[in-house]
Length: 442
Image (cartoon, rainbow, N blue to C red; front, top):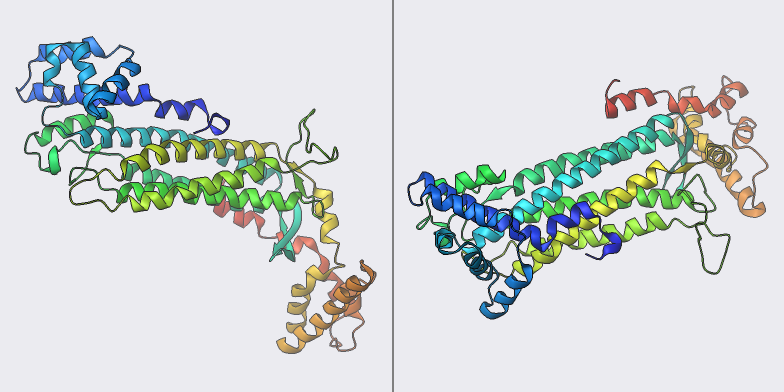
């Protein structure tokens, strides 16, 4: 992954030295397990740990050996033989390369997921803070991009909170599904390795034994894992897109923080562009793109092939590192978001009260009018307002005033009843109930 979109805490999970360290721990723990089975002496196992545990592995030497042997795990084992000496022959007893590679990959994915879960927790805290701060900040709700009815900006943030809470729950489940281990030997039969070795290493590595493997851990687990990352990326883009739309000049209800000294355009000095949320849209596309190769990796030949290997060397680091960066960036955007309540009110008044059409419709049906007649009456007055806007570029006649003058209004409906339809608090009366559902009582 390129440094521009990488954070050290996540990139360290995928560094070469980290991978070799995990390989060694798998091999050394397996040797410890053989001690309990009487196959290896305690002194031998102790010697292996003593000679290699605190050593900084020489990655250049390992790569040099790999150029000759053309096999990464054999190159590593050869290097350990140079480092440890004769006791190294007790490493990799009955183990196949896939046991090491698959177990390591799942350890790395689990560690990466722990970082991502922390990222989500921070994002959730930030969304909750914004939701409560703007719980009653009334703004325009839109459907199809068109003014619909009033909502609150706090509800927008609460929607995002609930969505990312679901994302977190899915990621916890994905971590559980991916955190398996296979130390079952060639074609997964345990012919040359006791299943108790696998159980021992699983306990030491914080994993659970794969119930049945071939010579690889089944890749449907990984497909679901990367699909989960893709869903989280889509949720990131959904919120980023909402912010981008709300920052458009014609709307300008919220805005990304624009730092002192920041420049928006090389050509137009006035520009303040939503560059962070646009960037998040692009990053989300990349994370989702890794889902397809992960799903294609499910299909392997017989008990094992390595068509999945090159794919996972790329998508494992890239997907998790990119998502980590995106979650952190989104948290910063939400935390520093500039919110303009006065502009929100101004936008609500832009169409001369058209946003109150449903309440007017319901009021008339609850009086004496048939729904079809009431709808026709309200719509015809609404279309007059739209037509005025089309011709003049602005609205001079308020929709509710126009409606109150319509001779088809039933006599029992007075003008005050019609004008009461503009009460904005009508639309926020259940905000507390929704917040209790999302955040619980506090």
